Amino acid sequence: MDFTKKDWWKRAVIYQIYPKSFQDSDGDGIGDLPGIISRLDYLQKLGVDALWLCPVFASPQADNGYDISDYRAIDPMFGTMEDMRALIREAKARGIGILLDLVLNHTSDRHRWFREALKGRDNPFHDYYIWRDGEPGTPPNGMKATFGGPAWTWVPELGQYYFHQFAPQQPDLNWANPKVRQELYGVIRSWMAEGVAGFRLDVIDQVGKDPDLEVTANGPRLLEFLREMNRETFGGANLVTVGETWGANIERARQYSAPDGSIFSMVFQFEQMVLDQGPSKWEPRPMTLPALKKSIARWQQGLHGCGWNSLFWNNHDLPRIVSRWGDDGACRVQSAQALAVALHGLQGTPYIYQGEELGMTNAAYPLADLRDIESLNAYKDLRARGWSDAEAMAAIHRVGRDNARTPMQWSAGPNAGFTAGTPWMRINPNHTAVNAEAALADPGSVFYTYQKLIALRKTCPVFVEGDFTLLCPEDEQVFAYVRRGGGQALLAAVNLSGRPAAFPLPEEFSGAELLLATQGSPAPGALRPWEALLYCKKE
Image 1 (cartoon, rainbow, N blue to C red):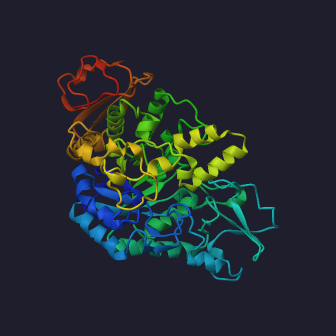
Image 2: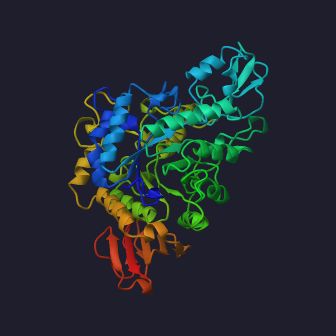
C-alpha cells in the first residue's frame, strides 16, 4: 500500500491482531511482537494493508492491556521498544502499516499519574482524574460500571470517590483538564514519530463525559476535544484514525468521519452488532435478516459521500461471527465465505479479525478456563440475579469476549503452533481441523475467499466509490445489493441461510463478469445454502 496517497485507507483492508493470542516466539505461552514479525509473510500473502494491534503498552493486565500504565513503553510480555521498531520496519517493507490501539479515556490505577493523584487533593496530578466528595457507602450517584458494580470507588485517605466507567483498576481521565489533553497529545505525537500508520482510539466518544449528569458517551464537550486532538496531532498527516464510538448514530458518525478530516478517518459503530441483544448483551433477542439489511442500508446510504464507516463482523470484544450468525458445524466454510462476501462488497474499510480468515469458531470453555474480566464478573452478577449456572454459562458461551481471544490456530500440531510452552489461554480443540496450514493447502478454503476479496478492492473502483441500493429487503434468506460508481456496477447476492433460496439474476447483470463464486458455477435463478456471488459490469 502506498501510504503517501491521499485517503489510502479507503482502499485498504485492515487486519486486527490480539497480540497476546497471535504468535508466541519465546515459549512463555503469551503472544509477542517477535511472533507477529514471524508471521508477516502470511499476512502479506493474505493481502492486508495494515495491522491494528490491540494494546501492547505496559499494563498490569486487569483488562488485558486496556488498562495502560505507561503509554510510551512496551509491556515486557510483548517485547521491547526495539521489537516494536522492528515490527514497524519489517511490516512497512511488505507494504503493511501498523495501527496502535490507544486508550485515552482511562488509565491503569498503576499509572504514575494515578499513583500521584492518590497522594493528596493538592497534588498536581489529582485533577488528572475525576473525583467527587462523599461519604463511605454513599457514592455521588447510582451510575454503574460496564464491567459490573458501581462506577465510583471510595478512597478513604482522600475522603473522595473516583469515577471509572469500566473496572475500578481503570480510573477515567479528566479531559476537562487541559494538562491531561496535552499529555495525551504528546503520547500521540511520540508514536507518530516512530512511523506508525495510524491509531484506533478506544471508546473515544466517552472522553467528553459528565458523570454529574450521568452522561458518558457524546458529552457536551466531546466534539471540541476531538477537533483539538486532531489539530494538535494527526490532522493533515495522512494517517488512518479510527474512533470506537458505541454511542454513534449516523448524524454523529458524519461529524466524526467528515471528509474534511477534522476529526477521524472513520468510525467503528455497532448498530448492526447489537441487533441480537436484549436489555444487556447477555440476554438475546431474535434478529431477522430483514432487520440486519435495513440497518446496513441506512448506514451505507447515510454516510455515502459525507462520512466513512468501518466494516466488521468480528473483533476482540465480539463472539466469532461464524458461530453467531453462520453455521459453525457442517457448513462452517460455506457460511464463513458467505458472510465475508456480504461484508466486503459494502462501502467502507473492511477489518479482518485474526482467525476470521480461517473460519475460527467460538469455544465453549468451562468457567475455570475463562480469562476475561467482563465474563467473570457477569457470571457472578447473573448468578446473583437468580440465573442458574447453565443459563449464565450459556450466555457467556454465546457472546463472551473470550470467544475471540483464544490463541490463533496455525497448525494441527501441539498448541496449534501458537506456542512451544503452556498457552496463557486454552487452545480451541478444533484446531486440528481449523488452522492456517490446512487452509493454505486448500484452494477452496475461507482464506482464499478473503484473499480474493482483498484483491478485488484494489482493482475494482466500485468497491470504494459506489453507492448502495438494497434488493429484496424483506427476503429472509438473501442479502443482495447493487453498487454503482467508478464506471462500474457491482451486484452482491448472498444466501445467508442453510436452505436453498430463489434469486433470479437481475436482467441488467445478464452477461456481467462473475468476479467471485463461493460454490462453483451458479445455478440459474437460485442460490445454494450459504452461497455467495459477486458480479461486475461496466457502465
